[in-house]
Length: 188
Picture (cartoon, rainbow, N blue to C red):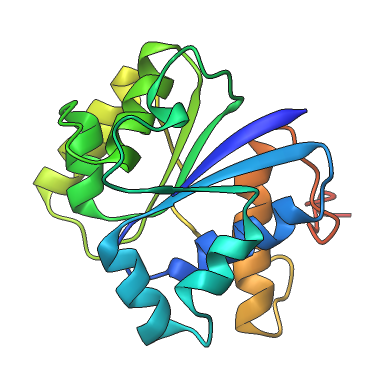
């Protein structure tokens, strides 16, 4: 069984994290470990019709963001990796600077030190040089930076189509197939 850690931080775009959990819940071979920041919980209520409790129920295990002693805070706890979606600039800064003052950042730091896959889905626009430097620094440490950039060759009809495609591309980075992913077939 694959274990995937999902961090949802306090940036706009919490639906990406929710949809990721929904897609992962469809796969019986994946065990999910969720940790959400306080601001993520607030944004869930602002941006979606979900409750934080309902989002937690999508995961196999949930962890308190303040619990630095949780299983996912240790390299001895084997996982395939972690996805921080969405990733606020504050959380990105913590990751890039190894400032593990909460469980999201600590778990991400574990992924980097253990050379496991860490995918960061930043949600900020426009970006200033400091944001770009943080993404570069995280990338140099081993993280994969994967902004939720929509693909329009799929001819999306709804916002859900755009969200689903972005999340499916994140799952591709873990070799997890999403049934709803339309792949580019070339210009025939």
